[in-house]
Image (spheres, rainbow, N blue to C red):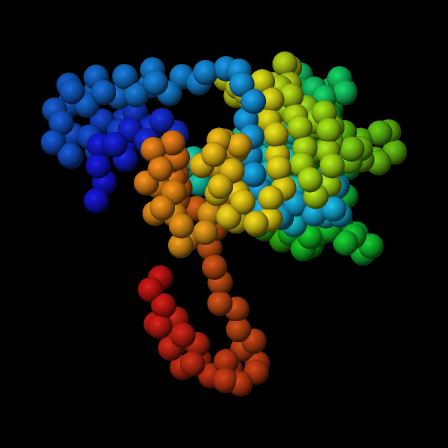
Length: 317
């Protein structure tokens, strides 16, 4: 059952807006006036503090890790990309595609061509201004018969990617697709700086809120705040540390002892134990991820629709 504390936490983390906070608070028994006052106090509490060093322990750093987005597989690489880079679009707290480096986009009537308008004045960490050519090169990095990128399949239906002008990119498809704004949020589709020949700089330079200072594959990385970040009110820490810690017990011990400020991939058997620690908050967030049960419908027993239906009915979906 949802409690008032749950609602306050959801508001603080940006998962519900003020209107829904007041509505749900009233449903819990608060008067509208009291709910409105509480919403204002929550909004004030949500104002971020600036400064400090944020230390994160992740579970899957490897000695083969790099900043080449074609190689991204685990949370360590993906997390680094989110810290120091941006994408054309991003998934919002409402689990829909919202603007990131692209401030707007529109599709042709049959959705076979998508045009993205870029934010103007965005700079990479090396001072280079973001342009459509960077976007074209970044996306083409995952295309072609020789591509080994994990994101190549997502662009199989792309015919061409064109820089219409310095701030406009058009993506032409073999057929209509409503998913293109969501495809652009995939962690492989990181936008990196390119040279005049379309070659990408995969050294860790991005447009993100933090600039890489050091990176030791399999060990960790260190970032400092980007003073020129284009998203106002974001990137509030002075610095961010990523630590590769494969052992779940070591991550949890580091969290409890204060060595780390947050960890990833908590062992489900110890969640309740961690939650009892007054210095630890276990944050549960609804995920946009989903699991599929793929079947070869031309191979027995999955060629029988009754079997497929039985499997569907066996799961609480």
